[in-house]
Length: 308
Length: 293
Image 1: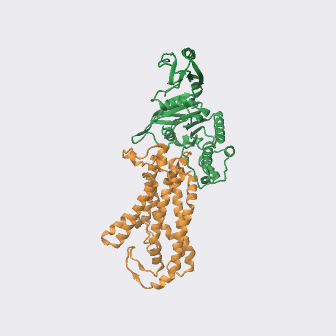
Image 2: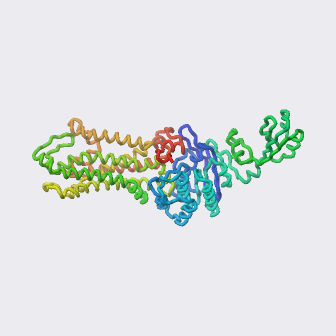
Image 3: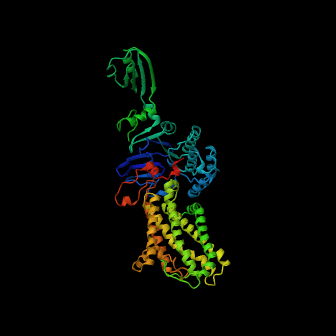
């Protein structure tokens, strides 16, 4: 059982009439890590998570959590999972405490001390009526609900939505602690910086398909360097067309941008034939990398990520 | 088995409605009891014709008076209450999004539906007991000519229990088969209006008398509980109908996709349309209170 992935999607298809929200998703999320589920709005992240929670049913394929089938073993899945919906709705008439008590009674086995700690760390006023909370505090209640039973797997749909930067940092620390205790965090986001900060690996969704699954550390290692050059005079057209291992990203007037993994020497040789005014080099950012997946035709992107 | 936390939560959610509707019916009962002596004096020896509620008879008889005056209105009021409550149990929770919170806990859909239904059923009992209390608290102060015992008046509203449960269960069923609570309430209100109109018309026009047998109001014994007593097979029939509706609601809810705003019948009938999926659809069907934050 310990070898089974924390979460597994196999050929998951979900359609609404003519709209294909999920188009055959295959994904394995290993245990004990923070895994990011990245994609623009409408890419299918929430749909996949809602299938996992058995709130909606797939047209084909299956979703599993710790080896339990999302549809057949619903109660087992929910017992082992803490879920924060992307579009969180709570009982506005209840106080924060009453709301937490309600969920604790439904779940059973909630560690009250841990619950108190979470509320304290997130600076949550438990006496206030839920309906009177700001969006950020409302989100904190949702996070405490998902976390308080110390579930094996946390499934969080846009967890830091509406949180201020200080609280975001605290949430990230809490999630890292959860992983240190051997639990798994699976979270969706469309905020690249958040994913980069938190996740070890990330799956990228586009139009209901997983376009890449990347190990972020490996990604950083394999990422090309980007070189931005300003010439004293605009170089003649075609000057850099045949530099081996170098890709000309853009050239406009006196400015040109190149990318290369390991051919910096060849690039410098090519540049030495022209009068260079300035030269800057930097690693390609994850943002540039990920945007390339969404801007270019499906299946084409920069970097060395594994294609799903 | 119903989940006890859900039963308690449902009763808590409905407490003010129970108090409001119960006190309203209790007020009606109390007012009628206090009016009775004046009415009895006015109608002494007057036999009224059938005006749609069966043979009325002597209104100076407290049994006849309370039968006509209280049990004409009470089924209508309880129908409205049951439609409101039946719609609130699952459909409102789905509409505002809180159903997702409940269904992300280790709880089967069956336990949730049964818990909600049990809470709703107990809420109806509360309303009827409060209505009976209206008789109980005022009848000892009025001369009922020894025709009817106070205890009998107290329990008489409970004869409407099975009718209310039936409407409650039918509303839950309609709400699980329709995309939104609004449509379910509209359908149930229209259905109840037609059924009650048929029931009244059938009492007035002998040629369509058969129509009353098709309406649940005939079997509620509202028109005879104090004058002829309860017909137990009528109550059994309504109870069975309520159980069937609740069971069908359970089956439909098991198949329902939460927050998508589409009927489970769409899948059975092979119609793929309806919701547009995921959050987008849930927001489209969501009631304003939860998205205005």
